[in-house]
Amino acid sequence: MTAAPLRDTSRLCIHTVTTKPWSLEEAAQAYSNAGVSGITVWRDALEGRDITASGQLLRDSGLEIISLCRGGFFPGAAKAEREDSLTDNRRIIEIAHDLEAPLIVLVCGAVPGQPLEQSRTQIRDGIEAILPDAEAAGVRLAIEPLHPMYADNRSAINTLGQANDMAEAIDSSSVGIAVDVYHLWWDPDLETEIARCGRHGNLLAYHICDWKTPTTDLLLDRGLMGEGCIPLRRIREWVEAAGFSGHHEVEIFSKSYWEGDQHEFLNNITEAYLQHS
Amino acid sequence: MTAAPLRDTSRLCIHTVTTKPWSLEEAAQAYSNAGVSGITVWRDALEGRDITASGQLLRDSGLEIISLCRGGFFPGAAKAEREDSLTDNRRIIEIAHDLEAPLIVLVCGAVPGQPLEQSRTQIRDGIEAILPDAEAAGVRLAIEPLHPMYADNRSAINTLGQANDMAEAIDSSSVGIAVDVYHLWWDPDLETEIARCGRHGNLLAYHICDWKTPTTDLLLDRGLMGEGCIPLRRIREWVEAAGFSGHHEVEIFSKSYWEGDQHEFLNNITEAYLQHS
Image: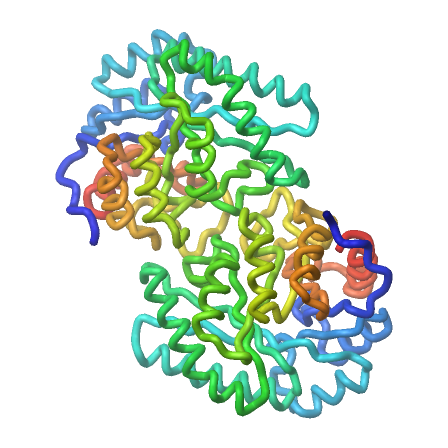
């Protein structure tokens, strides 16, 4: 079973990092003109800006702010590092509050050579430590399981099953999960874990792009929807069956796309979104 | 718990691809001089050679032939492709027989865009089709689960759990599994799946190297043991607890190591093997 084709862009959200060369103004204007309805803001796009005014700018452009990327990176070999991370995450919660972004995506972190279980304990401790701040700010936190190729230094949470375990253990309505097809498409348990994620009310965000063959860079060679092997409509069917009705967030890190014309790229994104997602 | 340090190279095997610039003669001579006890032969090292004489050369150098790499790549969109793959795998079985290699490592294959379940069905069908040939030749087949970053075009079997499922379903004493730390180290179920693999008599081979941070290439940037984040002694403890007493096979694809002096590299391998594996 695969989901029915999408008919419009009313649930299309784009991550600012996808069109990284653009300023926040340029992105807001172009997304809005293209009929994109949501925006997820990466922190670098806010660098040196007034946060409240930036949020207003986006809303004035007719865009809904879907989430802020990204918090996390909780593990650290030394206690001081882990405390620095908490400070930074509390700052991110403030930013989300001022921006009026309802959700923060967490890239949870890992320390090369530190046992993954230990990193997971530190991740859980970190999330629980900032949870009162998130609740007070009215901001939710989404654990994003990352592809196993990032288990060395980016995240010790590498499957949706692990993210589900952690979200259920923390058991707070302010903590859920971001499902990104790039990280998870290969997982033989994906369908059942998506269903479980929805059942527990933890499916908070859905990120899309594609996996190219060959992929020439571990970080910066993501594909546009339809350019790769990810069964996007099939996964969307699972996500919808799990009760998700939020935005479809296009998050593409791509050196080659960043080097090209961003207006043309945006046009290709909306076309690819309707044709392949 | 971690395994006790290794004291000698009596269980050290090296894959010919690890020292790719060397001919089979050069590798045999150098491995033997370095006290390496086993060799796993990659098919390209046999190109244009008499197979039986090559096997004899290796044994005359005092090396035990551990396995032949590699068969597999069973899936194909068209039936003709899958039949070509069977023909090729039968040829590999003949080579293993003539070389007197007791084991063939299978990189099982995947077709970009074809559902992974379909590829898995084709993999199982392929293994079962060549099984009588393997049995007749006295050669065993080892399914090697590959890292999820290879799920697009190299293998639809990406966890040890999946490999265990398949080996148990095929249920033949001629089919087992090759555990490679590079592919599997991140898996939260690794300890239990290694135990299961041993319990079913399926743990046929153990491959080592390391995962570097950063890793700059998806294929050709593997690290020497100790250079990365893989908990090698911990995994060896699990493998030994599962009853494995075979060779530790060093399999490193590395553009940068291949560009350097291979004698120096071999020296570093034996040192790293004793210090970190």
